[in-house]
Image (tube, rainbow, N blue to C red):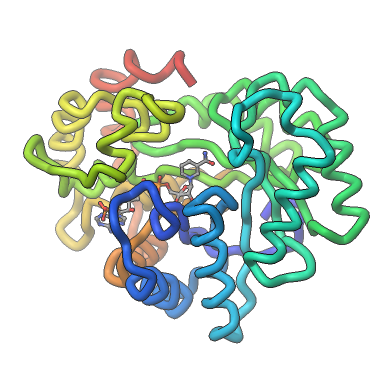
Length: 319
Ligand SMILES: NC(=O)c1ccc[n+]([C@@H]2O[C@H](COP(=O)([O-])OP(=O)(O)OC[C@H]3O[C@@H](n4cnc5c(N)ncnc54)[C@H](OP(=O)(O)O)[C@@H]3O)[C@@H](O)[C@H]2O)c1
């Protein structure tokens, strides 16, 4: 991954759903999913302090206690602020968030801390990156990176020489990062973490017009961006249009692959991507996602055409 010296699996584990905001998920299922992912060769987990207010991080600490494998854990800081302001990304607040993550993850030093989709202004405050440098020097964090909403934020973030990774939405419904950002990140040897790789489950091909989501599932409560950036839910594509595009993608999926695997394999076709981090709530999902690594190449041109015709006008210039 970038300049870190870590060799991370190209499929990681996205640990948002096992924390909260995705309907009810039992800790037993979550731990089983995490363990299965490790069994299948995953060695990179993405979480955040805010996922279930420490629940996701604490589950990962339990996993790490039971496993001997080396597992890189990336967490995030910033979203516990009561309001998202650039001023909130202060030394006192960042230090307190990091201390909490250290406790939740039961470690002395965090592997990777990502600023968690901060306001755009934060990228224009070198002092914030200076605070992260100080926390690195103090041995609280090994490396830091950013999780961004927009391509322009990603381009700005990688101007800071110690940014090791950029996490960004990248999937069959979100192609813009591959146009310019991927090349720029590769030039600077910055790791790229592709998040929301299944467009919140849409690209597994299992969702329909009739699908129902729990009250506390963001696919219910954030469909129109009521709680946070709408791009995080179904990749920001309106549900009806997405279902039509999903049917076109389904026609491209070879017989020996599931659609989720197709969507993940598609991401891994981009050599600049370090790791795709699909969320998984159950062992079966973790196993299926992990297997995408070993599958043959998929039809890139056809996905690009579907994107151009159906999805591009809805998302391309927004993020
Ligand atoms: N701001 C940020 O920094 C930010 C924002 C979003 C995500 N992330 C990170 O990125 C990770 C991935 O994104 P995401 O979890 O939002 O979305 P995602 O990976 O696109 O979708 C995950 C969901 O799809 C379903 N699923 C997973 N594997 C499946 C399979 N093989 N077959 C069928 N359904 C499957 C599961 O939900 P159901 O079973 O309920 O359908 C799962 O929770 C997160 O976990 C988090 O670590 C970060």
